[in-house]
Image 1 (cartoon, helix red, strand yellow):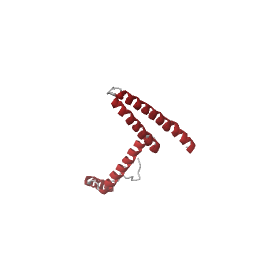
Image 2 (cartoon, one colour):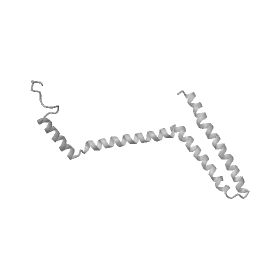
Image 3 (cartoon, helix red, strand yellow):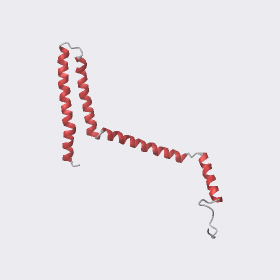
Image 4 (cartoon, helix red, strand yellow):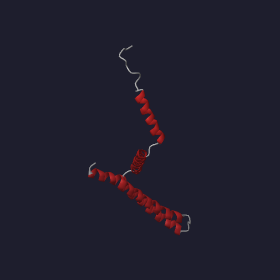
Length: 127
């Protein structure tokens, strides 16, 4: 995607919604502070709540701006983690093999040496 298209996409999908949310939070905070000073005690809680919502909006905006979609970031984290765990399991498996599995493989090797798989040997007479 070209830089110009990315700029406008980010502008409309990230920056404009952030500006709207921050404007709403600012208006609501001022409104609730005014109500709280008039004696509505519950408005003190809302006067604190709206700035916290604004800060949360900034955190989400920054996350999307730096890493793109949150679900893409989370799924990439778990893909990397799964790959790391799989590599570790393969390494451990290569280092320590089960003694019963080793004995079984030796038994199969001996059995195949005595009687090769694929049916009885052909004597050339045919059916």
